Length: 123
Image: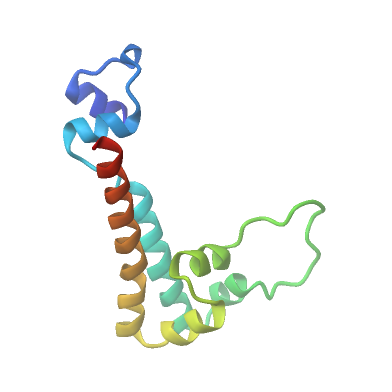
């Protein structure tokens, strides 16, 4: 975000939020959505192949986990972003064309909702 502030000549002392800076420049924060899209696509790639990564992703590694709260898993992110359970995701990932449509769909819907919220806040 600092590069956007430099481009628009907005100082940190101006007390402008990152969202206001993006609106001023007419841009969106794409990095998080890019990461999510790539993570979903990579999940499909791993599920189509039988490899060590598939075993790691499914959690079939021997041993005990440390004490405390469970860590966030890859599979938790995938199920949250797609809105489907892990079995459905695994079945759909076997078909490359179907998984491609699944991997791009939820992020586009989320993007449209965020844009609507921004426009409502500005109005």
